[in-house]
Image (cartoon, rainbow, N blue to C red; front, side, top):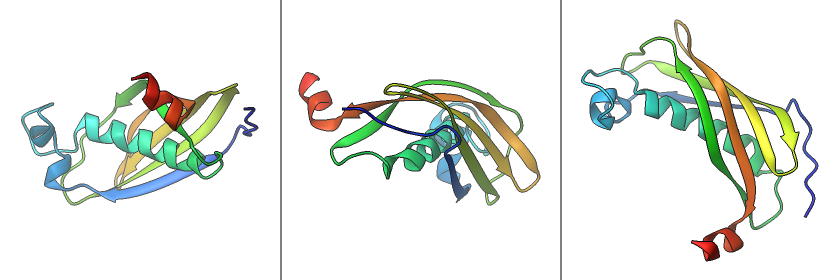
Length: 126
């Protein structure tokens, strides 16, 4: 199947940081601030949601690569907004620029690659 996505497609998602989103909860750190793995999950989810509605029934995207910088800490209770932008389409390989912001400014930036798969065929191979 051929896919016809246009570069420039954007996605947005916003959350409020909870105690379940902290470094101490994830085990990635020892303090109660927004965890890097939680931020990466938000970035992946934002990119995934931005493209899913354009895929045919039975297809999804899977995250295959992240290159992310976590620039500053965010405390529990703050809003975090993520923006994704599709910057390159290479067949089934989709490259996104991702950025995250809290109420005080930018907290994360990077690149994320997703790959289009047919769900049933992918699961059958596992």
